[in-house]
Image (cartoon, rainbow over all chains, first blue to last red):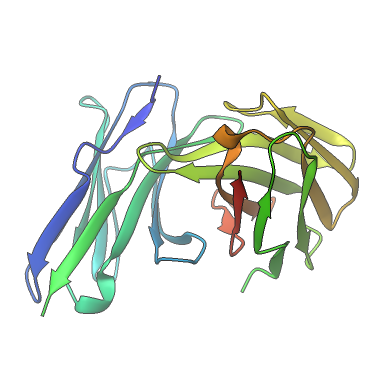
Length: 112
Length: 112
């Protein structure tokens, strides 16, 4: 059973606008959450993360929001750029940090 | 650049043959992981290692074995490949003081 879910397989956004990617999880023991970006024929690259003790983390154009009561996190990209077009995966880990659970990914297309 | 290489990068094999994929890192990180990526499933953990000769199963370990006789190398073996093991395989490392993983470029395996 998928413990981390990304219900939107794809998203299209105009350049300069905000992209919002969503992720839901089921395991309340998860305490660390990450977003990865993946281009075709490459490995995923780490983008941004957030600990469960926070509700927001910002890094430049990227902000991750965590709503623990809803078991929901989101990634905001502002402003969106064509180079942001990629597949985005959210991931979660528990206390040991040994196992990571990934969502199925959302393919973002930023239209120039 | 986390210094992770995977070999081979592409492989086509036949059902029933053994296959070994290699992950090599240059920075002596303790934690190493093997994932497979499939459409509709995202990234799923196969096995991971937390030190030389210390390994554990992930969520999709059936049909796979691993070995880690040196810090820098983590091998994934398919004893008898099946068509359901056609996938893209990613190796990742996690520095001890980090919660993030860093991925290799991937190996595309096709089992005919």
